[in-house]
Length: 273
Image (cartoon, rainbow, N blue to C red; front, side, top):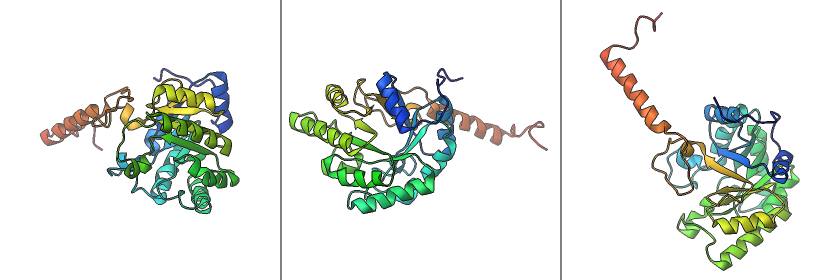
């Protein structure tokens, strides 16, 4: 049984997220991509389920997040939204769906919301994304921002190393966070930046920050379900805490099934009609 029971079973909203921050209650976000996993993490009491563009890596086997499309994200997000009874569902807008034109960004965000039943979208970038954010918000769609390590910009930076370690980049990140706050984002993900900087950013904005590799001062934290459950043993960043080893358990279980089939032990007389 889960060791956590939510105090309020009602659907989590942007207001609830802000209220949690103001009350000092940490926000738990998990990235998930399918109905079964989303149903389980929702039952466990997670506050936000992020349908991440990391589905490109985890579900499709791509080396980066860049190949995934709006159509792909809609398929994943639709199944997650069906599963989530309490958690807020936020969908990553994939590479190329919002960077070029604010009107196109709004059009894609509207399509994602209409075709999935999700509760909001997330996009990467700072001040250069203000136009897209404001246009999406005009359509009544909640927007979560994302600063620090932004995987959609991997070809620009050329590395997944920690971001904003020098003063100039750190100051720009703080300024970008303020822009996202002013533009109307309801929360901001801070990925792989120094913990002290994340603390400064969190103090500089009026909305919750959600950290991944950004230290404990953020209003909440996010991990990918596949990573924290040990389904992806090859991924071992410093920020990841692994809560189970389901990968090995699955391999062992399937191996036992194969042995039973090949030996003729399965199915037995109680497992047939």
